[in-house]
Length: 233
Image (tube, rainbow, N blue to C red; front, side):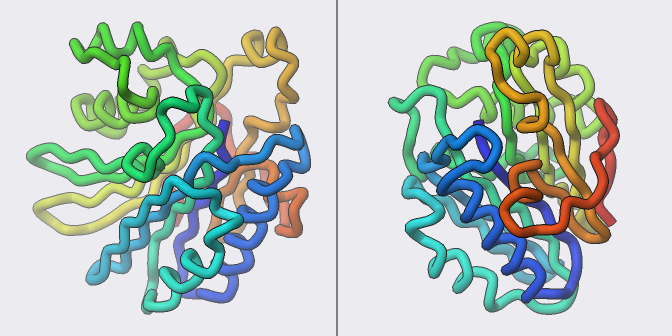
């Protein structure tokens, strides 16, 4: 389970406020009281400068690093920040933190994920041995093979949730887009006694974030559409 935010805009101070809410919710989640301490990462892109950073340390211990990474941003920028709570503690490392980078002949994209998918079944589908991989890595590889619209087909592999942020860069045009997707398996999370609220995403004018940030000092916004891929503009 993880907490994350996506932002598109020019207001660096607003982005830092959102990041502060993410840090707070990672330290003590207001919905579940989990501690999201198993690494963090970000990707930021403004059409000229690309920043991709991943750490295996808790985000709340490296807030100064996070804010220093945001300082060079200028113009309009697209940003994803992710704080991780790993289900498998043997798979915690800087290189296993989100966002994941994947590419093909047409596109480059970075993916952040909250929730879990059936790693064995998805690995079998992709003809990959997933033993030493995080399930989210397989999600990224699936989308690399199938394209953005392939996101919806991942529902059949979803165990708890498929909350996704995707920064997409087209190789030919060099244009970028930031997509978000909210889907969760209601029956599964009920059986696990996890509050449904935990898996919701909320959207404001220029941001989308995990529900916990709405209870950590940031404006809630509106619940995003369920099961539909959308672009944050």
